[in-house]
Image 1 (tube, one colour):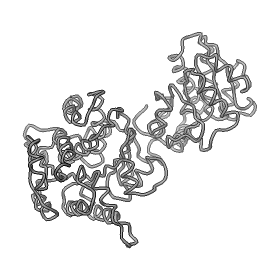
Image 2 (image 1 turned 135 degrees about the horizontal axis):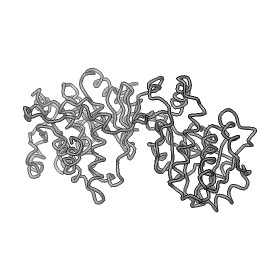
Image 3 (image 1 turned 120 degrees about the horizontal axis):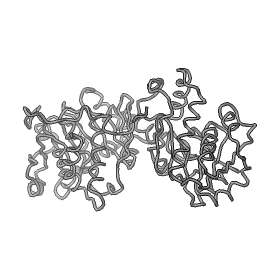
Length: 502
């Protein structure tokens, strides 16, 4: 069976071994993988077409020999080129090569064959490649990319690290990729997702029982991950049972971001939403608000008074708040209370400024305050620039960095982008894949922070609320389509939610 779990290359290798130990013959797995490749090839090119199959020295090459045999049996004209001689192949790959009755041409002839082909099957290197492709293999990659011929990649395009989504050097640009049992993070993380083209997931007979053995809990972000905890209004409920959100407004002339966040929270289902406004911004906010309430406050003491009512169970601070000590102090007041917190934009940057001679980075005081109350949900919503300011030069893939940040901060971290990663302190993580390009518009992140806040207000657990908000955000943008501006996102949410609840 296939599912939303994502496996690194090492985890996938372990799953293969466990499947064999459970009684599934490794040759059966390779035959099934090659059959899946051939099936996709037949969808990409009509019978009788010319297919060039590029094989490497590993199991990917074995899969490709199976596909070549099946395509030839189906009437395709198949040309196979292998980076090594047949007698240099080992194990299952050698067995499958021996079952290929057609010619295996030297790689020197492959570029000319590629130029004449209707389809190229790329099985040079697998997902675990850590070094840059060079020499003859690099020449083949260049020939494939320069040919304009459709490319079907086996597992991942050659030259792509399947765990990180990063090229190791020259990399094949695939039209479509077929992978097996479970996708890998590199199929979703950029630039890997774009290099893979459309990724097809094939069931090759590995039992789902191998999941969870030596694996970190990583998933593609989809409703199955969080739908069971998505708040559903009940007939006996009322507005206070759906939570009361407080959104901190910026000063006069910087109030729009807070209103976007507030609207997102209200459309996400919060029962009440109040914008807490500095006195100088009251008139500006009042001119734009109807269903969203408005309350003045002045400084940290004033915010403490706003939060004194325990029914005000979640707070959003950051959108348009301004970067400075004042915002940092307000964030500290928010974290002194039991209300759940979403820290976005200026709240994150303000936690990093004015570093003194203290050996402990000032942002670590924020992390310590978050960890003082581990039962209180906290979500951080940085884009890459804010992430670097807050967490420094963390290394590894985007997935690795988000996980490390969540562990360091004690909060759920939403590392935004077209491949947003959501990570929890306990190690769970999800990679989002439904964000359309028109989400790159001013204010869309403020709405996202508001959606997270609105779901938290209704009691949704922090990791699930963050995952759901990111998915709903992308679905709302997709539903609206081109021409999207941030104000459109909350208005599209009801239709997205209605479809989910059906």
